[in-house]
Amino acid sequence: MSAAAPAPRVRHADRAALGVLAGLVLAALLAPWLAPHGPTDQLDIVGLASQPPSARFWLGTDAVSRDVLSRVLHGARVSLAVGAFGTLVALVLGAGIGLVAGWSGGRTDALLMGLVDTGLAVPRVLLVLAVVAVTGGLGTGGLVLLLGATGWFGIARLVRGQVRSLRTRAFVEAARTMGAPVPWIVRHHLLPHLATPLLVAATLGMGQMMLLEAGVSFLGVGVRPPAASWGNMIADGRATLATAPWVSLFPGLAIVGSVLALTVISEGMRRRLDPRETA
Image (cartoon, rainbow, N blue to C red; front, side):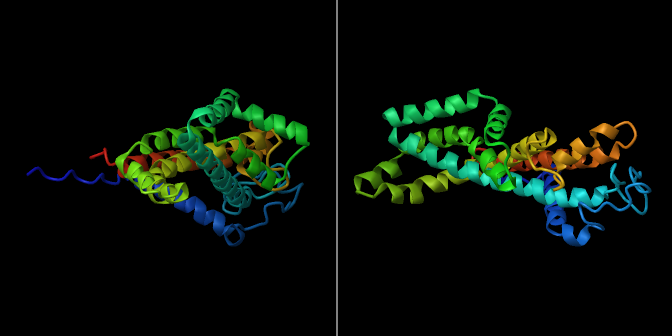
């Protein structure tokens, strides 16, 4: 009798990525207590502007004497929240539309997949900028909804493909033959099989959502100053890159670290949760 395949092990990179992400989330949650100053406090616009990192200001100050460490910590709250809630909106929309398309088939499937193809064909940044231009600007809540409403296309295609495969499986056919209602089949047969790919897609999508938020905030159409997000902090420091690079460097490192950690975690989750993986 052959031995069972060993369960995939958690690699050192996975542990490191989990540690980085957990540290960022903890720092964001505790930002009001960890930050030495308020994120918008101008300490001394003449005497303390553009101070380099030191024992007093660990990450330095910006051109208007705001403490960079305090702004990075508070910016984590905004950037991580926008990424998480934007991903949740995209997940709900994409999973719902993908389920309808994959289960219905026919004209409904063709219509919804045509919409998905159109959305994937247009660069997402252009969609966001176009909506902002039409609406004249959005608050943070509106930005979350906008990012989620433009980020569900890939999830819908993924779910639709999974549902089309699952609906022909014997256990689904048996449930349909026995007269089980569609909501019951979805809840008990489809969603458990969709959980793994959706979890992996959501983890990877959150990193992409954070990058997009940083990009539009850098362009001045995302999170608006004086609220701190990592994207608009990088924009604040672009005029002083030669003389005070730390203003943009530290929020940039925070973005890179969080997105890289989410990417590594999503790959580790896929490897551990996919039954076809053996090592």
